[in-house]
Length: 312
Image 1 (cartoon, rainbow, N blue to C red):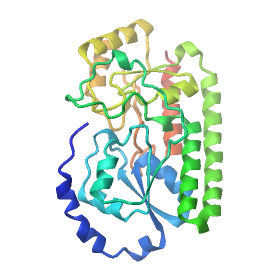
Image 2 (cartoon, one colour):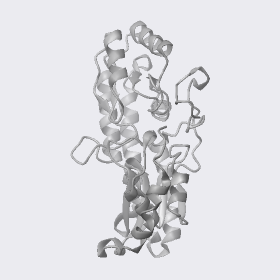
Image 3 (cartoon, rainbow, N blue to C red):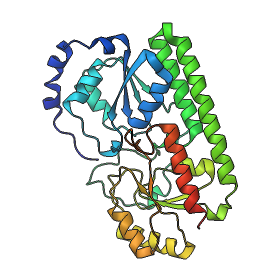
Image 4 (cartoon, rainbow, N blue to C red):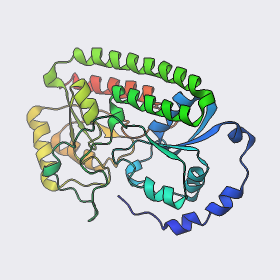
């Protein structure tokens, strides 16, 4: 994890920011801050027209290496509700909230979800520059299972209803409508993977962001990096992975939208396996891209995976 710029410099803008009037459109809606783009989309679907959502880490940006800017402190200071993923994903949030002197509610969207432990953690020797791994033993990527996102939706709806009791019924209806879409997505995906033999369900990715997805859809993911994109695998790990790709003839190899592709390009060259395209793991695409919202992201990823898995 990269170090922050000094918070004193960022906090210097706070007093001025709080004196600036909100625009008329912002004043009409409840300001809600979400930590990253995927979560921001989920929050927006639950909150609907009653809230105005801002995200700290935007589309195609990496929350693992996020560094706050002055505008982030302004947004956090003005928010009436902050929604985070939890499970160690936003290791920088506590310090940022202190810098902004935020005294409102912070909702952990993943509350109630049983965290998956990071696979093979004891065997990894990733380099974090001498710093402790910010994630601990829990895998934070719970949104990769749509059933977990249903839990996110319930937690967000309850938090909004508590903050804004007049809108409780609207939040409940929005949540139920979104849950129905999540169930439809999940049912479709389960049917698609059911047509693929278990032995073919093997995928290589840039970093280890798909354990929840793999457990739910019975797909085996192998990753060059650990859970954090700020980690570096050892030469031994890379060599072992290349040998496994060759021996098991794995043809599903994917980059991720916010990861450095150099490592996977090396693995592709040395294993003789051509990359299958790009997956969206920790961030949405920009509005004109193939994954501008969570539901579209999941359908896009699943379609990409199925196409390459069938070649294994």
